[in-house]
Image (cartoon, rainbow, N blue to C red; front, top):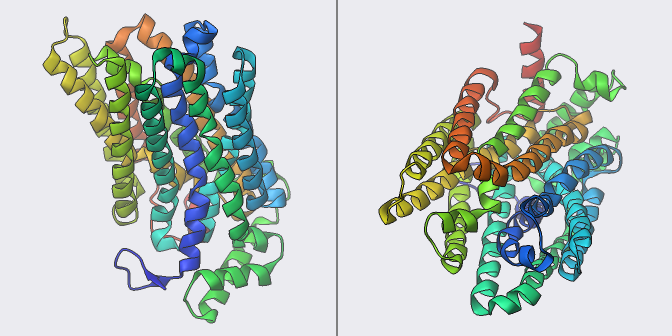
Amino acid sequence: MIHLAGKSKTYTRYLLITVIIAAFGGFLFGYDQGVMSGAINFIGPVFHMSSGVLGFVSGGIPLGAFFGCLIAGWLADKIGRKIVMFVSAILFTLSGLGCAMAGSVAPMIVSRLVGGLGIGMVSTLIPVYIAEIAPKDIRGKMVGGYQLAIATGIFIVYLVNAIIANTHSMEWNQDTGWRMMFLAGMIPGIVFFILLFFIPESPRFLINKDRTEQASSILQKMSVSPKEEIDHQVQDIKTSVIAESHNKSFTKDLFKKGTRMALFVAIMCSVFQQLTGVNAVGYYAPTIFKNAGAGADAAMVETVFIGVVKVLFVAFFMGLIDKLGRKRMLKWGSYAMALCLILIAILFAQDPISKAFDVFIIVLIVLHTASFEMSWGGGTWVLISEMFPNRIRGRASSIASAALWLATYVVTQLFPIMLDKLGDVWTFVIFGGFCIIMGLFIQIFFKETAGKSLEQIQTDQKEAAAK
């Protein structure tokens, strides 16, 4: 029995272990998101890649993830969340091996696409899975654990990249070092696959498939609440499922009143997460640090520091998301990021950039990263996981997640071109402008979901649509 965040209510160790194992899939996401930031400096010269080809190799993960999301949502609602997570672990492991063994650009791209399929599956299902098993009063914190795993994966891969890059010669790194960076990514894939054997299927999925007794047993193991309360929870879920079952068409379910607004908000939030520029900055972090005046080795070490910042501020996010609410954290996080990006643009406009400005730019990048992790980093996954009905949650969430990965791919492709054609100043001004729009969007369109059961959120959406 474990007490969480000073709450009087208690939850079982079984629930926490289940959440931790599921959230570990985010580590795969984070590792693969960050591995290119180290390898990119070595594989470009080896394979004689142009900036366009280099951007496409970097974009292999988000492009594959776009299709992985769409596949995952359909499979998850048909055969369950857990089986699809197994598939994602296998794909990620094969991707790491394929990238490490690549002898030319083509197999590198294919391997990145394969890994993207797996990451897309993970990014769709894990927030949904955790939301479906988490108690309503700490659901944001538990789904936020997925973002913590992502941030930890990014930190670890930055550390791995820095160790490899700084302890060997350039010749060794161009021949072998970058391969080791990718090969190390097989480890979390294998670990995740093994750990999945120890977690149950989602109780809400089981109830949707009329396996009520099995679902009730799992919920009882996850809570110390009396059986009567568990039975009441199961009945609420069944009532919701029955109410949703009148429409057998997924399309009708998706575009009915209430749900279509939820879909609109979820898709926009998914796209907005990438328009903060944080993933683009992450892919090309060493380049940005070098432009700010750091050497190649120093830039790699500084990206490790960013990894530490990510982990630290995701932890703060987890502690606050259920207390302050989603709306407040997303709104003010947007404005904080906008301020950082506009100040970065002002500093880049100085010619020449002084050493003091170099330091300020790096500080602002770190503050931007901290603001992102305190808001849109985990907040987007929380929102997507909460907003859809039980019967179509997997497929509907997959559409929103696919929008996120499509936006990731587009931004990844455009970011180096923007830096080249528009320059540092206008690139960061544009991202800053998007952040202001994001804050206004949340203020106008998003209805708070903190502290409500998934079924209550659906009831609120229906009532709002009926007005």
